Structures are given as C-alpha cells and as structure tokens.
Length: 319
Image (tube, rainbow, N blue to C red; front, side, top):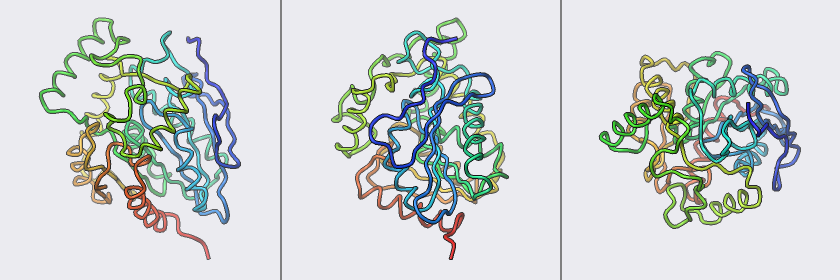
C-alpha cells in the first residue's frame, strides 16, 4: 500500500524511560507509538494526540513535564505523518480521505497504552487536528476516561465565512473528480519551519520554534508539508459532525484552551463548543498563537496552572 512503513525510533533526546514500537490499527495501518513511565508516585496516565504536521519528538518538553507530575505518558503519530505509515509517493503531502481513519489510530494507541496503565485514571489530551480527533474519541468512549484536555482544537478553521465556503466547495469538487491528492491552493512541500519564524502563526517563542526546525532538518522523514483537497474535505466533514452533536453530550470534565492570537482555528467554534457543553472549563490564553504547547513561558505558565488544577481534580495525588 505504501513505500513508507512505520518506524519505531525516537530521535533527539527523549525523556527518560521511553519505549517506542510499531503498532497496527484495525485496518492494518502501521503506527509509531511510544510511552514513558511516571517519575515518582503514580497518579494516572495521559495519552497525547498531536496536531497536523506534528510528531512525537515535538512533545518531549510536555512529556517530561507530565512525567514529573506523576503521570505515565503515551504518544503516537497519526497515519500520514511523523514516522507512521504514509500513503502517497510524495510523503510531504498531508493526506487522508476520512477522519474516521484517525479514530482507528486513536483506538490502537489507547488499547496499547491501557496495557501499560491498567485501570489508572486516564486523561486524553489533543491539540489542533489532534484536538478534533480527541473530541470524537471522547464522544465515543468517554465512559472509559477520567477527563480530557484540548489545546486549540480544530473545531472550525480560522477563515472568514466566505473563505470557508469557498474552501469547502473547491476541496469537495477537487476530491470528487479525482484530484484529492493534490495540494490545496497555497500549499506545497514546505513545512512551517521552512516558511520561517517571522511570519509564523504558531508561537512567539523563537527558541522552541527553532527546536522544531532543527529536528525536521536533521530528520527529514518527520517533515510534512501542506494539506491536500482530500484531507481538507475530510476535515470539514468531521468538524460538521462534531458541531451536530447534541448540547451537553459531554459527560466528563474537559479543560479547553484557546489562544487569543490564533489565526489557524476558529475561536468562535471553540467558544460555541464550550457554551454547549457545561462540563467544559474554557481558558483564554492571552498572547498565545495557535500552539500554546510551544509558546513563551508566560503563556505556558498560565496553561500549566490550569492543567495542574484540572489534574488535581480528575487524578488527585495520593497521600
């Protein structure tokens, strides 16, 4: 099916104790999965689901921080990115035909992680595209979870209504007529770091941005370029599906963070989600672009304070 099978390797300097392996989703797709033990007394477990273009190595800082708080941590690369299986000859193209395939990935990673964590309190944590996938996962399996956290989830795109409509029409028509594997207009093989720090919409933190840049420069197999029409059409369909869920479908505590300078996803869609689900605690991160997980310390300190308070409630310290 592809010339790029999954690989079980961790690049750079991973947090201590990590184990990496290839797991298989229910449809046979190879996925890279890794997990880390808690440092000190164990409180629970957190499974990370990252955004489009992202990979396990990008989460090292947060994995280490969660370990130090007493949590086992699991992370995986969604299909089509990182070192999981890709499906096009040009591995830089962001491609999937249906976001339900990401649920196959989530289910496989969750099942493998549960083999390590047993019945410990488990929280799922998704960012951006991973936040959209996490929202769907929670809607399916929330009875098995203690809580969920979302960082700038892709519940809508940061486009005007007119541009959203145009993007939907073009991606749908292009995919219908066999051009789903072509790049969306304005996208190409370049990654975010290829486009440079000055105009990035992800973070104000140059050091963390360049850390990402250095990683994919040294390990180009991690890199992912722009989105294809098929990916975009699938994303629109999944966002519409989440928006159609009934009010207060959410039955577990959820911490939701959005950045007031985010131009990638829709803060209105995020606010609407929080309003419609009363178990959601919504925090607005002042001065944050799209990725609070790699933002400046001033933003991260606020985010971590909210996370610590949330985790103390859903997975309290023992003793």
